[in-house]
Amino acid sequence: MSEAWGDVVARAAGLSTRLVGGDTLRTLARTPDLPSLWSSLERLAPEYLPAAERRAPSPPLLERAARRVMGARLAVLARWCGGRVTRIAPVYEAEDHRSIRAALRGAAAGAPPDERRAGLIATPSLPEAALDELTQQPTTAAVAALLAAWGHPFASAILEEAAREQPDLYTLEGRLDLRFTRRAEAVAYYAGAPFKDWVRVTLLAQGAWTAALAEDPAAALAPLALEMPATPLGALLARGGVPAADALDRATIETHLAVQRAHARRDPIGLGPVLYFVARLRAEVRDLTRIAWGIALGMPAPALAAGVVAP
Image (cartoon, rainbow, N blue to C red; front, side, top):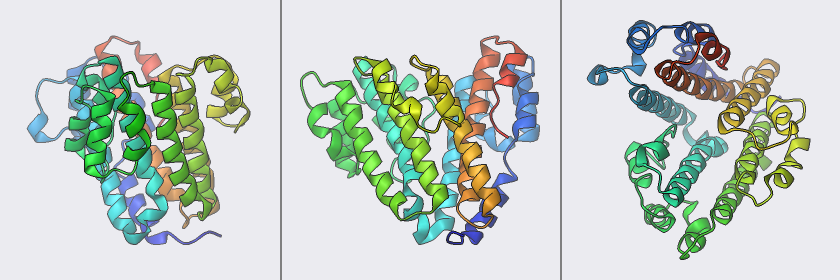
């Protein structure tokens, strides 16, 4: 049996009672319009609609609220871990990795800041205000320079390439990936099975994201498809072709849920239940955001409900 995390497990269990849950999310997916969704959320999950923001309902408004809720809950979890938070640091650094990747891609493509900011979660090292500033930078060089000014541990990995006159996005992401990978593997080396598996799934998904930028994506994805074949993520990659971003995100979350649920059952006071809560939280934020946008775009309710991944 792994090191006991019983106190953190108990607190994560308390936070879990505030999750909306898959059944309720599927019900919300069948609401006819955004005002009805807002009304239901005010009853079922008022935390997602703070009083100061009960304006005209819109998907971006709910997305911002959902991001803040997840960031706040992850911050609470970090406080409960105390000094042990270093043993799950890659959980937070994975969000930073996602945010920096979005900032780099957005700057390279000249995408609007709101588009770059979509779906990004605040962490202790990149809080809300920092993410807002990071996703407004006009160039990859500016993104890297800002991270360096803040002393972020990923900055030095991308500074040189980002500052080139014509930086290569594939190289940039490769260096970012490598820095995250080395830091995550260093923590996982001394960790138990739940965290080793969490890192394994995260790095596999990361590799698939970056492979899509390669000159030959199919060749880059081929070896990844051989890993974890009995999981939703492995099955998606084994189909061949470059998976859509939403499909990749869904398969990653489903794999985290399945793997950590199994660990939680085997060791109820180990790290598995804590990581299972984190996966459920990520699933809920993804589902709520997707439901809001789907209703706004007129997607069929059965399709929206079927797309819910939260347990």
